[in-house]
Image 1 (cartoon, rainbow over the protein chains, first blue to last red):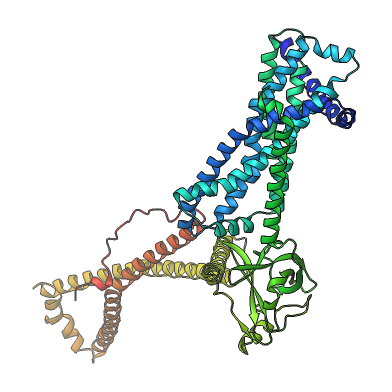
Image 2: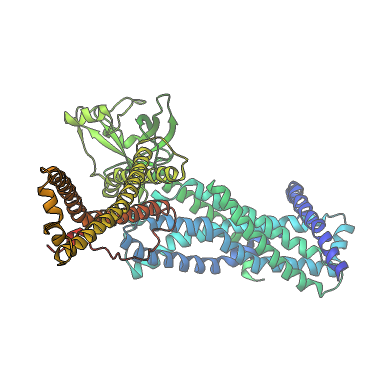
Length: 260
Length: 354
């Protein structure tokens, strides 16, 4: 037992370094991917990844952001004016929708939908020896398989975050009209006064970093399958767990840095 | 083929373009609302403190944001130089006589309030210094009426401004009390010997020592008066014995008045013996008068001595309590310990029946 624990402890840093090296390898292969795309290959993978990860997740993101935005506005408008702080609703809305929940919730949705899908797909390809076939034909699996998926996740997350903000800030206003009518000018004026460029920069930065983390973890776990088909679901579960953990840690770190 | 797969490129393109358009529209709208693309004119002011001030704080006029604070620095006079800008559309509010005021409180945050000058309608040149509302120049401008207040003072700030001196006073009083208690404790411990409090305590201690010495002297005096009373009693006993002798039929009277008695002899010696006896009686009379005086004095002073002793004893007890209380000050130690009262048998001089 002691030996097993010792082996795990000694293996953990090696695996972490290997994963970091994998992420660096993905970033290093991005120019190679675009070169390959210019030559007419690999473009379909990126397009389909954005379709599956971004477009197909739009409905759930829209519903989620509408509901959360409406709840924040309704609760804020009923509580904050009693404290003489009605204007704070816009600051809270920006902080919650744009800075915090937008990036992190879209990231969770993408982890649950696409993180598992990518790791399962790549794991299946390893089991079916498709990766070996790509290598045999001279295609780098990182360039051809991992990079477009990671890029697709990053682009999808950024776009989904924008839609989350759209539905959260604008759509929730429409929902609020059904419960507690509010003049559009008043709403926009309050919003303009509260939002800053830093809020958007922080939000987009989070989306890009979360996308890199989710895509890298999912492809890494998928390509880590060795030979058995039973390893595939195990790697998919690991991709979800590690993706969520690393995303939450990165979120806290970026929030901390943006407020310094 | 499924529609989404078939038109994947178009769907992804629309998905991307819509998001980008939304971002651009939002940025332009926010930029226009916040005046990102609008020229701004820079001014400065000098404040006594940067408390409640921060870079990016809004400059307000009647509740509207007309500009923002861009820089805060401490100058050579230890005052705070504040640089702020005013949006072009509000530049007409910055005229000769304009003042700025920092309205800041910890609950609602703060703003730099712009008060419009009424002396001229021409805007001030860029980089001009606009005086602060409570500065000397600001007061002078207000007195001559060259400025109109753009918004009433913040009630919380006003309240805090009034509360601040009060809290400072309380803080000073607490500081002084702590110093006094420290000095008292130090004096009682003997570590502090200088200063008015230490001198007062020292004087009280020396006064108590003097009272104690006086009481000891009074006690010794009273002990002497007991001996005196014993002597007087002895004399009185002798006088009683003499009186019994006079009443005895075979006593001194027959011996004196008989034929061969002392008086006969006395009358036959040319008054020599009589004169001697007369001298003796005169001396005895004088002695008795003195004794009478002493006895009367002792009798009249005894209750007073007793009362003085009792009062002195109580004064010492109270003095001990005060000293113990100071040593065991409630803020420093454990307070005044309970004392078991010992009632005196001596009746107070004031309670004496006349």
